[in-house]
Image (cartoon, rainbow, N blue to C red; front, top):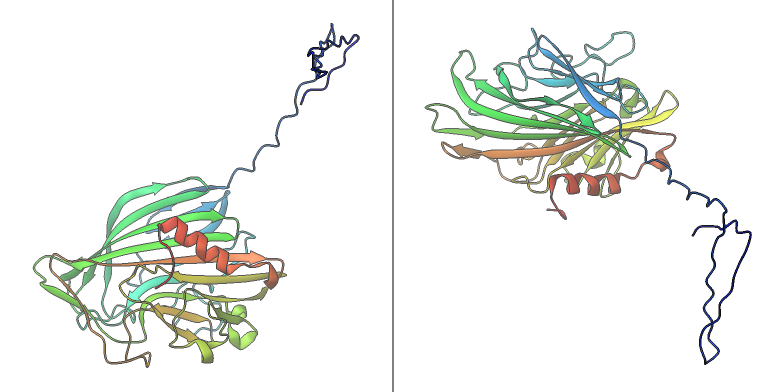
Amino acid sequence: MRRNRSTGLQLLYFGSLGLGLALAACTGAEREAPESPAPATAPPEVSFQHEPNVLHILIGGQPFADYVYAHPEITRPFFAHVKTPSGIQASRNFPPDPDTDLTDHSTMHPGVWMSFGDVSGNDYWRLKAKVEHEMFIQPPQGGAGRGSFAVRNYYWKQGSADRIAAEEATYTILAEPRGYLLIWDGVFSPYGETQEIVFGDQEELGLGIRVQSQLAEQFGGVMTDAAGRQGAEQIWSTQSEWIDYSGALDGKWVGMTIMPDPGNFRPSWYHARDYGLIVANPFGREAMKAGAKSAVPVKKGEQLRLRYGVLIHSSESRDDVDLGQAYQSFLAHIGATGSH
């Protein structure tokens, strides 16, 4: 409502029943302009810097993660040096620092990755068979609060350069109020003359994260799932909507949360370890002590889709983290509702 600085005010009364309507007229005074609403805070810009074999991802001009798609030792793509909005690195150093890090599985656990210990008898997890990056099928595209890119990879037969499977992976990076959200969307199919690929049954199949060594349960970190279970002993081989690995680091509460898409072909069991590892695994039914041995075939002309969210977060205290709301936000982004 405007305020009037009037030097004269005329009141006119109307209505034979005693009802009045007052009309005010301003005479020669300046009217005060209405206050402008405070400008909304723009989300930070997601941008990319390309070097040979590495795509650097920045948010608000600061490093978020490196997507490494060709490496002399690690024969599959991965994300390394994954950082929170406060700039603290949440994933283990790559390569591990022997002075500060646990150094086990130094090449198999580089940060955030998706891999499989058994696809038609080929072991990509332990780097015995190779995943070849062919090309970016969607070039990196940044913007306010959002960036994305997509790649095509080929899975080689172990001990040869024959391709048995193709993967098209789309990566979306979102700057969320609760942290940075990486959405990993992979689609797998037999390649060329291959009539069928079969995903086997091991602990080591699916999407993995390796947190900073200081966040590991061995050193005071906390593993929690959506059902309220805590610790590797309680969580290993269970299923839930999400699982978080976090702890105190550099004065903040820092962590990484895996959120499987409820539309995946099967809920994921969690291969959870106190040294800083979580694998969301929908394949290893027998290995995860959950039933009969599993074999998941994908025939020529068919596809298998796996989609996960990974939230990288930091806050002043553990009480400031609302992972239930973060999971709902992830569902909204992928157009999913509810749980399995």
